[in-house]
Length: 304
Image (cartoon, rainbow, N blue to C red; front, side, top):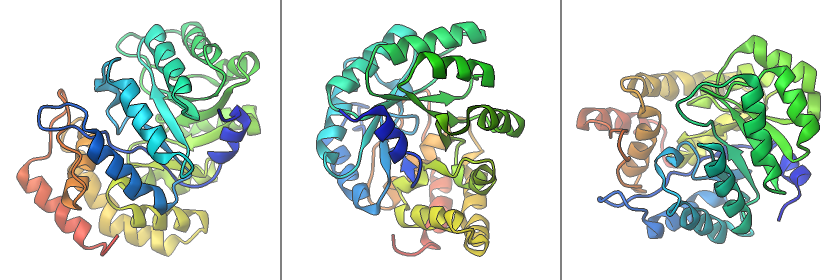
C-alpha cells in the first residue's frame, strides 16, 4: 500500500488519465481488451491512471463488477503506473468501494460525488470524512455537481482526515478555486477535472493547478502528452495550434448530446483500433456521421 503523502507527490506533477472500461455487445465487462488497453496506454508516461473513474463509467457499475475491474487494473499495471480507483455514490457504497480498492492493492481513490440528492456543507463533510476514515490510503475528492465543497469545509476536512490529500475540481469557478488555493496552500495536490480539461489547462496552471486528467489520452495518447508538455513549458504556439485544429472542433461534436463526454472517448478508441465496446444506458453512442467527423479530426493529428 502506498503512503498517502507518496500518492500526493505522484499526482502533483505529470499527466493523469481515466481509462475506459471495456464492455462487450451485451454490456458486460470485457477483461481481455481492458488489459490490452492498459498495456497500450501505460508506456506513454501517465503519472497515474484512474480505474473505474468517470470516463470509465463508474456510475453504471454494480458492486459485483467493481472488484474485478479494479483487480484487473492493479494486476496489469503493477510496477508500471499507479492505479487510483474510482469510488462514489451513497456513503456506505462509497466506503465499500474504497475498502475493496484498498484490499485489492490500488494506491488510492478518487471520491466521486454522491448522486441525486442535494446536501448542505455539514452533510458533505460527514460524507467525505466517513469515506476517508474507512481506509488508510490516500483520498482525492472530486468537487463536482452535488458535491461542491467550500474553502471552509475543506479546511475542516484537512484537519480531520490526514489521508485526504487531493482536490480535483470539475466546477470551474475561478473565484472559488483561488479562495481554496489561497486558504489551503500545499495541503492538497490540486487537479483540473473539467471535461476535456485541455481547454482549461493553461488557465488552471495560472491558478496553481498545473496537473489535470486527460480523457483524450484514451485514443490520442501522444497528442495528449504533447499538449500537457506544451502547457508545462508555456509553449502557447503548440497549445493554440492543437486547440484550433483538434480540441475546439472536438468540443463541437461532444456538446451535441448530454453524456457525449464519455461516448466520444469510446468512439475515438474504436476509430484508432482499441474498441472498448458500447457505452451503457442512459448514455448513447455517437451517430455514424459524428463518427466520421471524429475520424477526420483524429486523422489530422498523424500517428500516435
